[in-house]
Image (cartoon, rainbow, N blue to C red):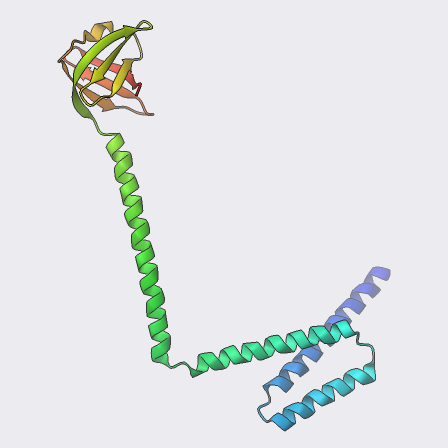
Length: 188
């Protein structure tokens, strides 16, 4: 019972508040200054008669009224712009958006090229070969050092051999030479 009474009172207050807001909006739309002033005076008089309004409610209504007035001013500014000005503004926005999209596209293409360039096979010549920790390491003419993931004995690498490094799946790499294909990893 208390809940239904509370809900009824809540909706009643909301409806009354909405009616007052509508009356304020109706008064603010009036063009003639004297008629508009009389309309607002009548609203204030009805508020004094009810005397149920709190100062907070009046402040809230003033804020609502101010917001409605500001909205009307913005609408009038939009109405005063000619269609040519509006079209010009829209063209400027479109041009700025196009340039932003072009910059993003260029950046994305550059990043894609960088990723693809990392995954391309390349040929090189072996500068030196060493044996460390039971694995063969070799240095290429581009100053990169690579190591076999297994022992690498079957590859039989020598200084001056021409090899090819081919990327595999999941960041793996293979060394290809005349003896076959061997899994390698880059050291530096």
